[in-house]
Amino acid sequence: MLELAAIILFITAVLAFLNRRYVGLPSAIGVMAIALALSLGCIGLDWLGFPLVRDYEQNLLSSIDFSELLMQGMLSVLLFAGALHIDLSELRAFRWQLSLLAVVGTTVSTLVVGFALFYLLSFTHVSLSLIHCLIFGALISPTDPIAVMGILKTAGAPKNTELVIAGESLFNDGVGVVLFSVLLATLVNDEPITVTSTLEIFAHEAGGGILLGLVVGYLAFVMLRSIDSYPEEILITLATVLGGYTLANRLGVSGPLAMVVAGLIIGNHGRALAMSDTTRKRIDAFWEALDEILNAVLFVLIGLEIILIDLAPPLLLGGVMVAVLTLLARLVTVGIPVGLLGRKFRLVPGSWRILTWGGLRGGISVALALSLPIGGERDVILTLTYVVVICSILGQGLTIGKVAKTVCNPAATPSQERH
Image (cartoon, rainbow, N blue to C red; front, side, top):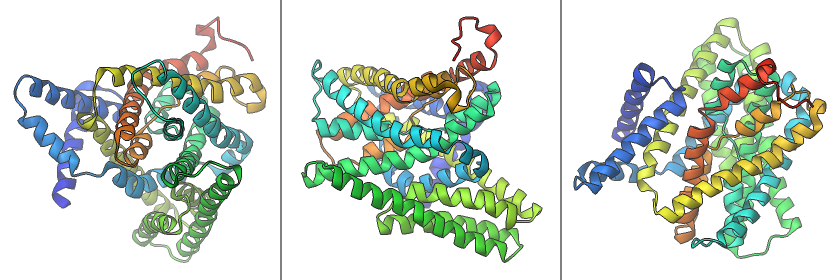
């Protein structure tokens, strides 16, 4: 395990250096693009009769359980780190907007993508049952703020828009995982979906996750307030994340939602009432560094994983179609409501463009796809998921800055709509 971790960290460090020194793309997007190019190069060498490099990469990646690594380890840290720096008072001011986008938007997106995919596949040689299509809708609907937030800051996007994107992404990860769990349980148990059973599972996982996050976050706050020594306080926050997420899994409640709530408590009440200036700076530096490192590792793994994906032309074409479908679903469930409600969302005119185009899909979608039961349906869903994620990160991620600038500088875009 230590050797494997050392190899992955070494690869990540080299790719991060190459991106910073020669490529110059945003960090997460850059390392993923280089890793993707390397994997495609290995596939090309294999076609030319030099299979050794591809065989080595396949063996390396086959020894990594990507789903387990992300869902049981990295995700807890990434969500906690993201919530740690969100101002709860500002987030509370947008509570109904975030509830609408994260809960209603993710649920509707799951249904829209699921039913539309089932209809579209009837015109292709690829087939999936309706329940598998809905499962795909659930795993592809959560958005990933990692790659887009840095770009929005560089482009000078409005602060409220950044806050809504970050808050929505933190909570819709948890909602998406709960919906995925409900649909997967229906598939595995071969039982029909009922409103009662769905609400029971949702209440247990989502409500239990939020309650656990409150308890764990409060206990950590009490411990932080009783001492003033940053090494121990950093250790307390780390134990809160890893221990709290493990406990959530044991209890069968939503770990992602628990970590978001715990992060908000420690990041707000903990920072203001339980930490000295020195401790606050040290904890911020620690979590920012850990967040950057894990993000880089995650996106490198996404780029390398293509070597394990079925690249059959029909599936690739289907993946591109589904990438367009998920973007349209994002427009329907987020862009149009924000555009129609306009001032009620308290966002600058044109923010619906940033929210729509900034809805990137990331590692959580790939991890959920990999957690499906082995079979032909899993292979199809995994390829579709992978193509959507790559198109989303490289396509939307590299152009979201331009979209943000058109909203921030309306004088440069006379045709921009007025809400």
